[in-house]
Length: 201
Image 1 (cartoon, rainbow, N blue to C red):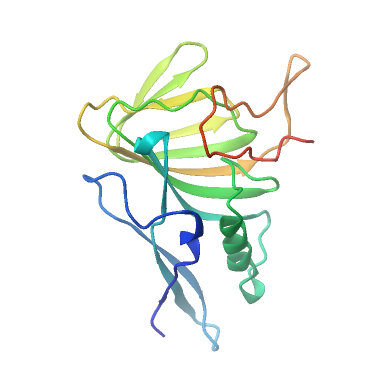
Image 2 (cartoon, rainbow, N blue to C red):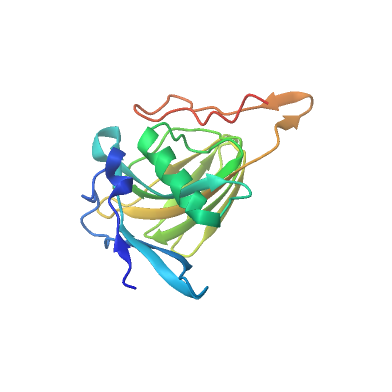
């Protein structure tokens, strides 16, 4: 059976990509046919949401609970419901988020912390990781940052090219250091970006 195209993720996004110099992407969801054989369930073109006047774009690849229920496509239905609701923050309570982010030339996002364990993979270009201790680390294509609920920001050092990263975020137990609880902090904030809603435990 041929994979079905889906526009369900476009409820809060646009198929138009912000970054002219990066290739468009497609997410392929697998599943099982009636014989129990693996098959491609759907092919979904990227759906982008612009922030900061178009200097940063989000493609919400997939979000789910942990541990997800794959029976009867429950995980797919859950993802579609969350995306359609338009209230997904950077992380999500009791679950995971996989997101592609494009950063425009010389764009620097807000300094922020999420109550999550994040895997950040540089797919295209280079990016600088800024931490609140003042350190700056440059990551190149293929490099990976493991963010452990730290206060950080991302900056694209290029004056001409866009940078692309893929992030996987997983909700964590509350972080306590020297008796102080460290929760989600969006710093100066970003218009249109909801709170994660996983910081109430």
